[in-house]
Length: 352
Image (tube, rainbow, N blue to C red; front, side, top):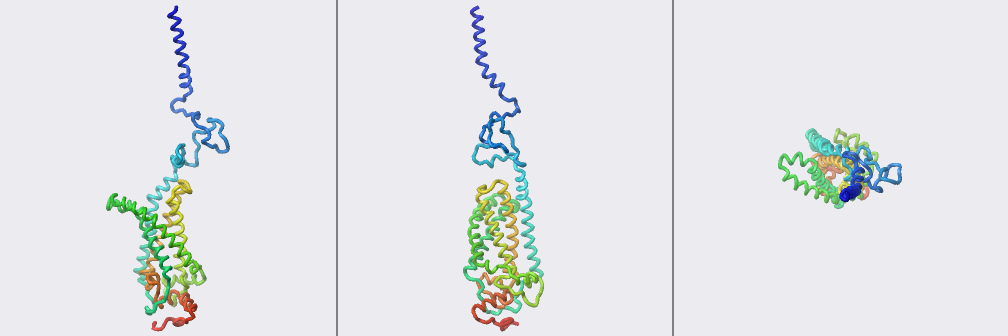
């Protein structure tokens, strides 16, 4: 009897020791079953409810529009976004639409300018060069122009390298050429933005007063500045004609958009989330493509397109016949302020 009682006592002791483990196993969910008991309170806010009183009130998954968002314990909450459908759209834009769109805009502008040159050639000074020079732009004016111009061309080339480097350079030279070029281009792109913004500010301060639209600009637009169709006399223009004013406002507004969006891209997620950064990239790329196309036209007019135009920013002076032909209003006003009569009511002496 003593041995039998001993066995009963030992069995009862083992059962008492096993009861806590059995209770814990019974409370655990089966495979594939979810529970909210492990969800801590105080980490979630349920819409329409200001306070969570128990774990059971916290849903395991709250749809956020069409995103799939999980939970992370690290400070970077953006990493909780597991799926973002807008990201696929942005990826298609970055890899496909941008390349085709920017290529069509930029190459289309270059092709149109080439065709125009083949048909029209260089627009010559109608009465030839007089040999007399008229001051056009000061040293500060030219500094503002060339600072903006050189920095924009650098930004354009490095931006095109990032956009088209992989499909163009990799097949030709391989990744070992593209990689260091892209890295150097990114650094150069970021630092060149500083003189670009400086040039924009200088141009705004120096030229905004002379670029206010006026009634005479409409006459210039209707005749295409005497370029698109032959007219007996070029439209009278002030210091800047309507075409130059369009370029000025285009550079100022487009350059401002590039500067702001570029700054936001250099400090990612400082002011917006993932979707906002994607929109900023789209705006930056689209504006840049149109800006490059516009500047191609500006470069064409200032070099091959018009005789004597480059002198204005090249040496700060223009031929007197060129000034009378293209900016008669400015020419007359300049001499009126100096209390000197113009060379003549028509063209200066010696002109045909």
